[in-house]
Each structure stands twice: as structure tokens, then as C-alpha cells.
Length: 412
Image (cartoon, rainbow, N blue to C red; front, side, top):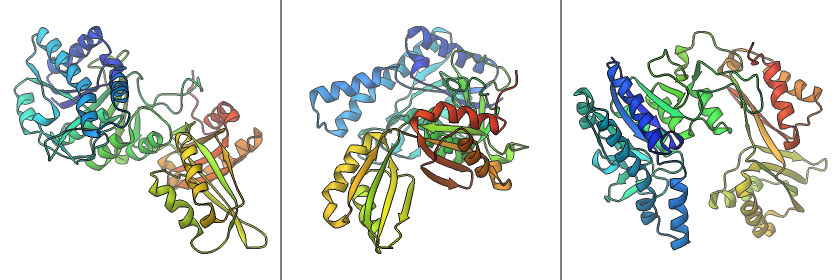
């Protein structure tokens, strides 16, 4: 017997029929002898509609009231799911974030979880009841409803699993696991049976949409085993049909490269001929940080005369216009010649914990791209990741070539 937290995303609870399907899956796990808790998102599209209502009423809305509005989507789904379970003869009730409580900080619209009291729902689970908990929401110390930001339901589920010491947290979504790369682009992409927390964290932060970054961080910190599987294709009770996200020690033989991620939400900015003197980087990136603009890859090129430098960095496309505006407003202090902005770039990242013990991974990546005529604009690395910035037009070509050269293609 295992203690399980089952989390269902918006597409999994998109309408009453799908909610009934969720109830059947939860009941099947209960019937198999497991203790079960369910965490649900709002129905697909509901949160977007609630956000739009807020904007129509007050473009500069009060974030506290925004949270009160958008948290209602998950509340509706939780109540309906509990009803569906009751109709199947299962003891069930819904629990709102403030009833557990899921205690968060006071940063409305993107709160962070501070603690969860899981004692009561653990007792209910042990007694054969299925608690249904809305994801995405909590309560501040001032007794105001808070929300965790986009993707917060995954974070809620993992945090609840940690609080009740669950054996596993199953994330049901519209994909049947984690693939070596995007199967919509690379038809030979294969589903991974297991992936490490670190690899999944890199993939999530680099464009893979399977799991939200904060949920992976929490799973890694609390060593919560997470399984990604589909609400529509995976059979309940089968032998781990999705992908397990686990500690590195659970994977016996590591592949050198586990996956290749890509992100189209990239923009490149180059400041041409910035004065080359101490403190220039702080003058550039300080104002960007103050404006809450995240900067990723950074390259600095020193001119031959040693008096100026070209500074290139990347940010998200949505932040590009604001970043340029901030830099232009600080032009006198920065003393650059001109700004060159480019939205037509993509970041490709090769990921794998096996890189720690193998050489030549970067060289193979660079040579493969060169053979395909793909120019690398920016490079950044970490212990288990190599990222390059390339022209967006070469995304599919580069992705397929790298997937093949690292031996990731599925064999038919």
C-alpha cells in the first residue's frame, strides 16, 4: 500500500465528463489499496477568463482581490471532483487552501509556500477518505487568499506530498511522460522511463512545458518522487506507465545526454562599443534587475584597442521592449554607441547528468551544428547542460541533428 497524491491539470478536468474520469482514476487507486489525495487545477481556460475579468474591471487591479477572484477556479473544480467521487460511493470532501492551511507569504499573485499542515488530511486518507484540494492557492498570515502564480498547482501537489510524506506524487496532464525532446518536431523522440531531478529542472527551465520549474525544485529539495503521466492514455494500476522524476541514485546507468530542450521565448540584445572600464557590467545589469528583467546568456567581446567592448545578452521576448527602454534611459551613464535587438533567435540546450563523467559532449554539439551550417551566436554551460543561441530558422534542423548524434532516436 502506498500513499499517493494525484494532481490533475486543466485539460484533465476541462468538463464534467473529464472530472468523472478523474474520479474513476482516483477510485481505482483507492480500490488497489492505496491512500489517495487529489489536487486539481481550474478547468481549462477558466483562469484565463477570470484574469480577463479582473483586467476589464480594473487594469491596475488590487493583487489581493485578484487572488480572491482567480483562486475560485480551482475551488469549483475541487467541489465538483468531490461530488463525482461521492457519486461513485467514495468518501470524499473538498478542502480549500485556508482550511488545511497551506500557509504562504504575502506576495499576492505569486506567493511562495511557507508551510502546510497535512495532519488532518493524512488521517482522513488513512481512514479511506479521498481529500480533494485545489491547487494554486493558499492563505497568508493575514488570512488573505493567495495564489502561487502560473503552474502553481504542480507546486501545490508536490508540497502537499512532502507534507504528508507521500510515496509518490502523480502529475496527470495531456502528455504521457517526459520525452528526450519535443515529439512534435522530432518524430523519433522517445519517452524516458526515469529522469533525475536536476535534469528535469534544467529541461523545465529551458523550455520543456511538462512540469513547472518551482514544482521540480520543491520535489528535489524534499525528495518527493514525481511521476508524469497522461489523463487520457495511461492505464491506472499499470506498472509506472509515465516518467518518474527521481534522485540520481535511483537510475543505475546514466545516459551521457538525456534530452534536448529548446526555447523560442528568447531575444538577444547587443550594446555596441560600451566603454571598457571597471563597473560597466554592474551599470548595465543593475537597472535591468531593478526593473525585474531577467537576463540569461552573457557574452562580452573586448575590442582590439582595449577601450571599448560589445556586450551581448539574452532575455525573454516579452521583456525585450522594456529592456531596450531601460537601457536607452540610461544611455548617458552607459556610454554605448548603439543597441542591436534581435527576436529571431532560439536557445537549444543539451542536458544530461552523464556529462559530469564524459568528455567531448560540447565538441560534438558544435561540430554537428557546423556540419549543418548553423552558426552559434552565444554559448553558456553548466555541469549538466550546454546551451547555444542560434537563428530561429534553424530550430528544427538543429534539434533533429543533435537528437540523432547523441543517440537519442527511438528504435522502431
